[in-house]
Image (tube, rainbow, N blue to C red):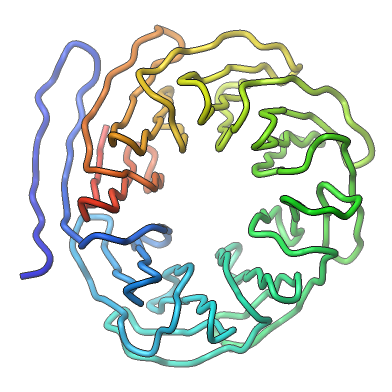
Length: 331
């Protein structure tokens, strides 16, 4: 059999108790999404999308009709896949049967589900498409000044980040009206979170964390370079780095209140209850961090762990691409 599920129960130790379930998927899967109890993992080179339930059971695989799948998400019994070479969103059953093909702009990449709608960013024409998943047709499109993989959704508003762009825009808010902001020295905006009327923007290359309204910058702090992720918890912002093995803790007022040292650098962060979960890709470790008690526990995973996805308030899924394993961790 290609898919093997193993259940491991980790004993209570001095810090945390957790349960780990491992599912073998196959090597080369790089991207992960979670929705409505289903995880989709995508292998572009193998032209494959595997669907796994949150209980750890492999439900199906899509391997027919794909040229270069980039992103996939499950919704209402169907799987929506962006195909980079076909310039389309392909719609499948969970058992791999092609249902429909929705033509979008060239080189579609990032795909998200939000408030019952599918959003797709096409790099070829710098456009984000909003798709009705039931009609399986484009509902609206939003053209931007340059392509980007990074956009976020707030209600019906698209928050578009101009990553690596040369245009005089850093972030653009698009709905019935449009506004944009430009910040000097912010060339690689990667993440953005909103708290009330304030937005917290993270620049990957410089590690700059910036607070802004829709009209002006409020504050910025310089953190370690190459900052790949940030999360918000209990009125603090937690930011990691690919340059230094740390998590910087910043208040909503822009004060660096703490720097938590980790065993290795990390790529992704999640929040589970009061714990910060940090993923290390090489050698492949998960750090369970209590930022208030300053306690850290290390959990060994498979080789080259590339993706961390929260699937409930108490559990995450980790994808290790080289060893071909998926880990379900319940805390």
